[in-house]
Length: 345
Ligand SMILES: [Zn+2]
Ligand SMILES: [Zn+2]
Image (cartoon, rainbow, N blue to C red; front, side, top):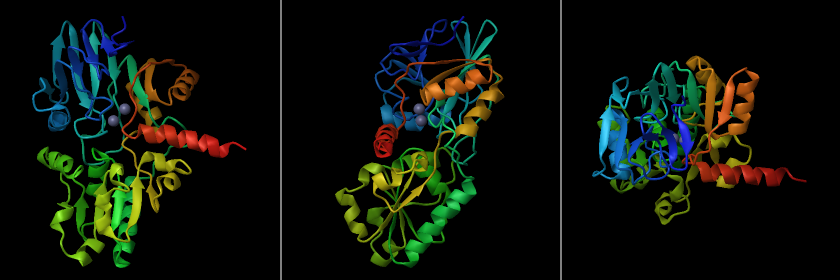
């Protein structure tokens, strides 16, 4: 029996009568993590991993009916044993393990294998059937080791500070910004967070994640101090009046899509840092093989490429039609389209 099927509302577990990350409102929703394409409003009842509780309340409202499970804790619902396991993607992200009549399925949500210190590291879970994302499922996507990435960011920041220019680093407010923050060298200068970033960083700190101190822009009154600062801001701040205080600043963008030729230029920033909270191509392969699954469903991203590769490995593989994207998805589609146009003669 299939423990998960794709329905118009979302991924559905027939014996348990609940959904995983539904994109339309349902009665019972299991949420893998707080990114907006996976955690939507309007569901009657929510179930999620405990470390993500604060984020879900912030994004979906304090009045939602939210039940929290510790990682590894299990509950039985209509004969289905359900447990949540770390996905290493963002704070509170979970893979959903379902067991029913001896069959085990795991739905990954979004995941990353590198332990970044800002959330519980990815844990491989053995299963018969694995449901995976494939956001960066192309051989061109290979992330550099994290220490090297942070060395690059800090070197860029230091050079700007010494030249008397504020460093503005655009990054998504939930997950990416906290990961950048965790790797910054506080000896270089002050760290400033945009108003969309700082409350989420505060939730990370409340959840026990050690992050360097960061301040709101209004808390820095000395112009010379501001010129030594690094500013973490969401992409939506780019070109907004909020940027005016920085004068002649240097800017960068942290995203997995920076691996794509042309993305940095289209974003109009000085520097691109390739940083993702998703698994790269080797990471996807490693994660899938660690599950021992003989059948794999692919939910979003490079679905066809991944299905073909899995079949070449002798696995049963299929795509699921879902409405998941990525917080950065608009960026992806336009970047890929622009690249195609540029490549045309
Ligand atoms: Zn996500
Ligand atoms: Zn996703």
